Length: 248
Image 1 (cartoon, rainbow, N blue to C red):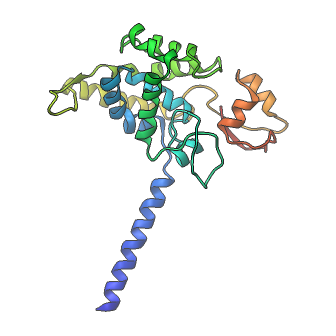
Image 2: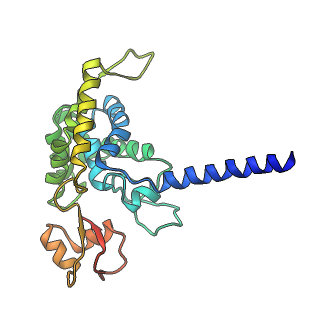
Image 3: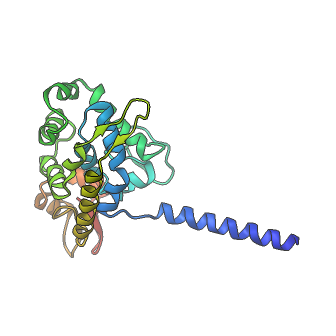
């Protein structure tokens, strides 16, 4: 009897470890990342006025749709710098207890910074292009390729559809979606799954290093900088290895 109980306990423990390991090792596809975070983005849009499409696209771009080391180890989906207590990686990026904390800090940043606050008066929640360009001009990043890549993400995955939501009565405090809207979203997700046939969300999201290539070569080719490539890939030096995959 005692051996049976111990055996059951060990089995449960092993199942728990397997579940945790699988969850940690999870790799998002573009569509699964959007499906996982779209409801939160819509709720934050209702609470703050920042378009859900913009929230999703910036997170998608900055975190390589949830697969960057910073997203995995620090729950940082927006490339916001700050302190962290991670022992898994050395990074200048801010650490969060969850992805939701990261999302809420992003919209909070939009509200806190004076340069961003003007965007709420200047652009409506359905003007995603104005918001993206405004965030760039407010100093979110200095990379000239940032704006076209974020806009391309919105357009490729039709993320502006998530800007079209209504709010239920205050006592429920949840998103209301009509049956037609739900059907539209299901169609969008199936379309996104088809787009996942190619891993990159835009040409050049990742690059596999070939013989003789340097960070300087890649920075020139993809209209970015050596420091940006090192930061995005958590590189301590500029040395590359053939076959190495880099986030761009």
